[in-house]
Length: 271
Picture 1 (cartoon, rainbow, N blue to C red):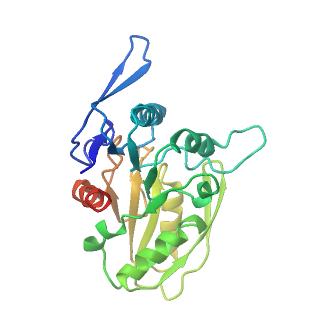
Picture 2: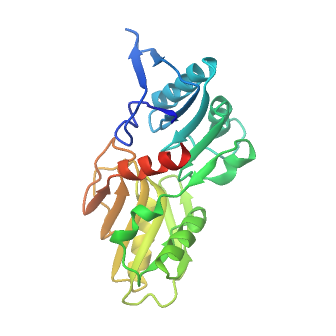
Picture 3: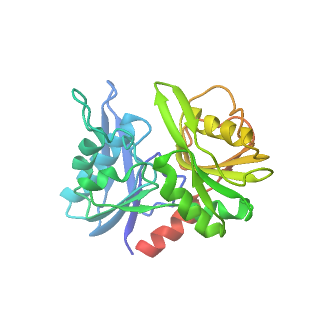
């Protein structure tokens, strides 16, 4: 069996079998120590939402590789994945992150925000859609709030045995406009599926549009709930999310799904 290590932001997701210690110098500089590195190991560590999470992951990975360990890196939440488009004068941040983490022998990411990173990073992307299934009606319509969520919506609809459609999003700063029509929506329950909820502006704009088109209920399924807002979502009736990110408790009618059993089953398959 491979030794399993976890950084502090991921210890609630699995039961580590190896000891990994993170300490800080008086000035705040981070330092990590992996006790008794083994020949093969699984490192479970999110690289966000805080910058120190990325550094902790990179340092732990480097410590294991310098000890000659074959490492499978499991990233429950991949920070910097939204910075995947090059603009003049700005870094391609996910490429920088990938360069430092690519020394892992194998990388598994849970619900990667964008597949553009595959241009320079080899990883396996796993969608944890099965954890939402017990809470979702089978006769609902699955809708992607924007183009980037289409693959996720299609996969969820296939699991539910229902149809899926998509909306279009235009963003100007924090101002979000959603357009697009969903067929035969009158009186229906709609499921919005996406990977990240930060401000919630896109999700709420999509839910508002669906309600205006005749949907009676909107359920949102979100893998990574950052929830950077002080008010509940106005048009989403129910929010289902995982406990992968635990920095802020969402407001409103929210059900947080525990992921420990799911992750431990995943590691058993990969071990």
